[in-house]
Length: 329
Image (cartoon, rainbow, N blue to C red; front, side, top):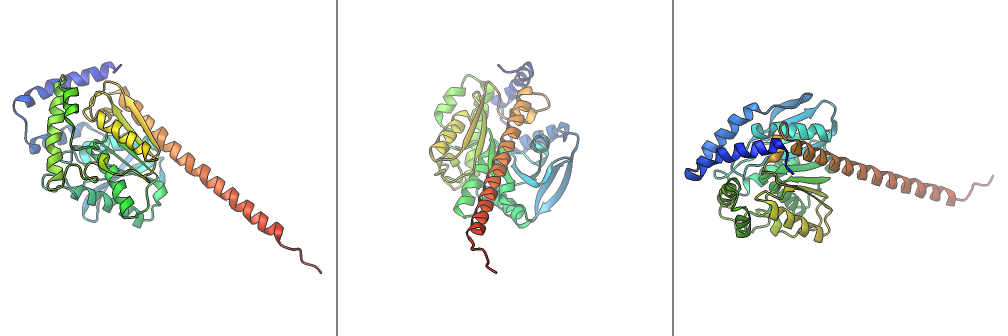
């Protein structure tokens, strides 16, 4: 059952969306509102910010004091491919990096409608390949994103596979948007919740803005439509009350059927973007702790595999040495 804090948040969001049903705001107005709201989002204590330009694109290193500098979380923010920024997601990226014990790279990828598909995907590819050029090893990199950013992270995996780039260690989708078609069945499911219905109608329009001339069913636009073989381990989190719930569950099932290691974590009754309210919601903190546990599991599995390989190499060397004839004097 959702916490009292979540109940208050939902009541606030429901009240705030009331006027939107009568007069939907422009994308510019929504962007401004989110930017103003981000003024109250702060990095956790002990996390440091380093802004820079990544091949001309605005980017940020978010570095927890005690993090392992070898390991990087490449984070792609959500916002329906039209909203969101480094500012709006800095706080959640900071706490996620701190909990996971790694540095995070966040990028200001280009957004629709000014820059439709494939601009955002190209920017994500640019950032990943930049990390490789900077000397970071693929097995030390994880991808992560929320909502549209989660879908973009999954599309990035597909693009890396098709271009035969080395794959990252894993990918994390926080309520990822995997199907820009947004089936009518989803609209029927959320019809009784005004806030969710408005959200569903809005992102349906945003999906068309992002896809532009591409079909909404194109695999790199809607990853659930892709062949999902040969992907690294995935962690997917979603709430059964979200607009995107059906699509996340469908994607997880399809990926598992393709042989991909998938961890699907389902929460009950939470609004979309609940992770961003981690300072206020115990459910968000719990979810982010689950992400951290997943990343520790990936690193532990890597260490175990490396130990087995070293043991096999030593055994092989010892076997070769034992088979050599002794010199006679």
